[in-house]
Image 1 (cartoon, rainbow, N blue to C red):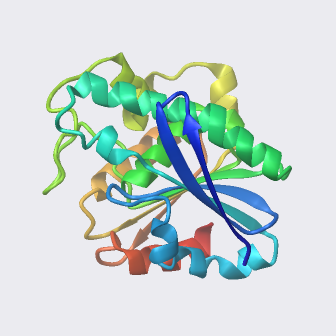
Image 2: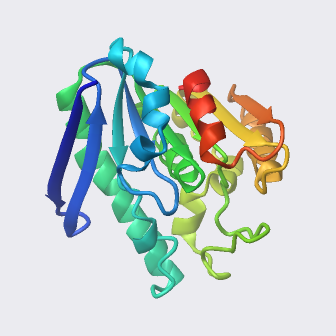
Length: 242
């Protein structure tokens, strides 16, 4: 399998950013890591290996990027307003640096946003906010409202709320979304969500599914037995759904 390492200085984030590319052709998969993951996480978790048959066959090309969680949502030293602003800058980095790189590397017309746990939130947020840039969203074990507290998962904004949080949170902005053009693009997305019956974000996934249904956005919500918020389940999910 072809493996390509890239690094460059991001003028939007004012720091070096790294990523790994696996494969030579096929639909482009933008892969967001978990909270503690780095750009190499999906390789070490063997999720890349679970996709290897499709990658080697030229069906998929994987772009494993940094998640920047410790500079955004999990940087407790920053004010919550600065956390979400840093995330917005991270989104600008993806839109204006990573996606153009992907387009210049691979001309395939399908781009997939994919992630696990916090990466699922990041994938859903960017794909649902910019649905014209993606053909598919695949999100495993996600929490789609980072202001909610569930089990050991805290409100990542410490009670703070503003428009940036609203517009980056799928379960917040979807109910008020009225733009016909954006809704039309959303309805063309292939959306796959997965969650386990014992996972902490089960109710939140059902809520997101309900909101998508209210907007007549077709999607699949796959509920797995037990606790699926773990690498072993994600490997099996990736082989099935990506």
